[in-house]
Length: 316
Image 1 (spheres, rainbow, N blue to C red):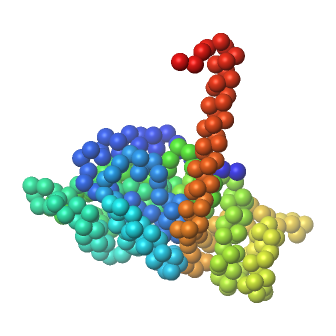
Image 2: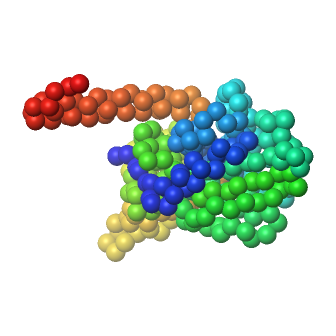
Image 3: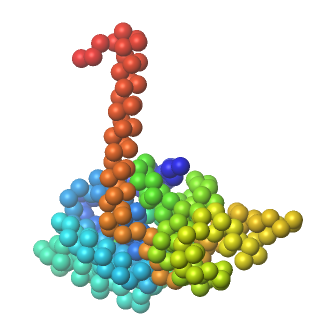
């Protein structure tokens, strides 16, 4: 099952970015360091063209440090791109962002040519928390609900450095199925757009392959990491629910409650420092997504051709 979520206010954000981008020198894309590939917006790349981009891996303090380093190297190898890791609650992140932007646009600066920067990111990536830290006041609403920020705003970081904030935005079609699940697990997708049990099962499968010891440390199932990693995901979810008291009358496990427990523990970093994907895994997923989109487009074109043939319309 693929997960899709692109509500109406995201159409407005897309329009605002399209109008603003012509006056922008550098684009900052805030990524979730726990899913640095899945939280990168392909629509943003399309809208901003070849503008220099600073990829900021936010929430690095709750991500796997080794995987964060791998992702920084992956992004820094791309043209017109620099990457840095950040915790949005750091007391003084502005200097890192200003320096990163000046490296990408060294000819901008000073009152005659102030730096003009657009900051974007998927919902719930920590952008509002970062904006509040940068502006030293509660300028943006924060919360764990996807899509809480709805308006564009400008922040002055220095006399010659202007930052335009935009609401969190996904893209109309998430073609990488794994990305949809990872985004949902992180809280970037509205709750009405996915089945929590399915997302929790997919999340557990990711955690079992690399973070089995952390699962055991949290849920105390009495299993060696290898045994926990080998469990069927549904059996593991049920075992976690039983251990955490998500049991209904008659002794049956409340699977919905169990799913909520697992996702909450991931989102709040109760499970420890975790990253759900490597650059190599993401590239493989994306390649499959490209093939799937090509097949989907070919089938669509074939249907249209059959309709034209049936109606007697000739091809030009």
